[in-house]
Length: 290
Ligand SMILES: O=C(O)c1cc(=O)[nH]c(=O)n1[C@@H]1O[C@H](COP(=O)(O)O)[C@@H](O)[C@H]1O
Image (cartoon, rainbow, N blue to C red; front, side):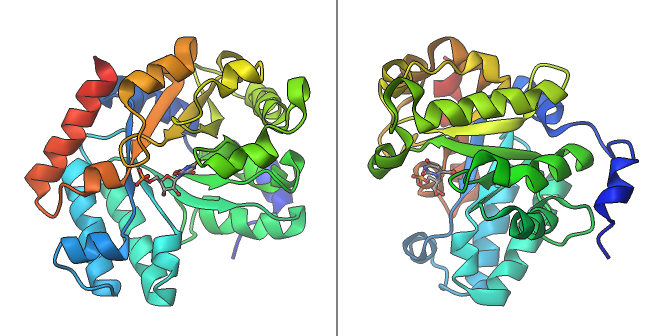
């Protein structure tokens, strides 16, 4: 049974904060997150069936290849969900294998709902004892940042983390996130994350943001500074969506040390050989470091 909120409030955090654990992993391993996106086309390219067994072989191969190399892995929940309960069981085993390999996990679930329902999502992804618990989860703040409160508080309690969508890598994101000019929606999300991270000590708080590597000059245009957030910036868009390590440096400037670049298809296309996947991840990492 989940413990009650009242019990939790009287207890100390159960492990070191996610922000501290991620900061240490980024120093030790470098700023790369490998996305685990078992697309049907990639499964076929790897000679695997588009079923739960194929999904499991794919996922565990990626963990075997990069589990000792990347700072984090990011399974894309949608690609497990499309296989129903069997797919979600594979996701559970993928998260367990990641923990065993010593690599941090980011469940890319992009959850967001009214507060009372959000509490159930938080329980699923962030509570000790939940079979789906990951080190962190991606969240959508578009029902209002404060609607994420149950996840923000549960993450803090359990030493887990969240990544809140701010400026996404897809071109359609602008139609919501850029609204408001100097006081844009994205700027408000960034400010809310910065305020939330004040509860954390150390280099990085546990509330990260998602800011695409493909956003070009949006940070400048919207007058958004990421340094004061003191959270990791998960930056998708590298590789398959066209962004390069040079783009990342140009886009993030002084906030580059906070950036955790994430690539899925760009690395996964090298499979199914474990050695080739590892080499692709190492090459990406070298580009991010140089
Ligand atoms: O939250 C994410 O990771 C995410 C946010 C975003 O703005 N853009 C974005 O592409 N993503 C995810 O990052 C992954 C990108 O995959 P590739 O384009 O294959 O590297 C997918 O799982 C996307 O759902």
